[in-house]
Length: 194
Image (tube, rainbow, N blue to C red):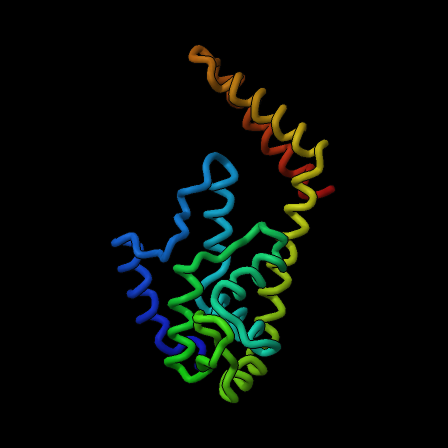
C-alpha cells in the first residue's frame, strides 16, 4: 500500500522532533492528572497511517488547513481525541511528497491542502480500514459522553477515594490487599459483562 511508503522516514523525523521538543506547540504533558494520562494514551490509539487516512478522508470533501483538519478529527471524537500539530503537519508534508495531496491557494496566509487524483485512488483502496478508524473515533466520543454523566463522575470519585485511602495505610495486611485485588478483578468482569 502506498500510504505506508516513507513511513520509516517520517517515524525517524518524528522521533527527532520528540527528542528536541519540536512538536509545533502542543505539549502532551500540559494536561494534568488522570485526564492528561488518558489523552496521552488516546494519542497512541492511532498510528501515522491512521492519521494520514483521516487527512485524506477530510480533504476528499473540502480543501483544508492543518488546523481545520485537527478540528475535524476532534469533532468526530467529541473532544476525546485531539491530534497535535506535531502529528498532523509532518503527515501533511509526507502526503504531499507521496503525491496524494497538494497545496492550493487559500484566502488566508495559511497553507491549504487538496486531494490529488492519486489521493482519491488511495482513499478508495483504504475504505475498509478508514471505516474502522472513524468507528474508533466515534466510540471515543460516546465514551466521553458517558464519562461526563454526574452519576458516573460521583461513582468514580468515590471509588478512587476509597481505594487511595485504603492503599495509603502503611500497615495494610496482605489478606486485605488480596481482597482488594479480587474485588477490582470482579468489578472489571461485572462491568465487561453488563
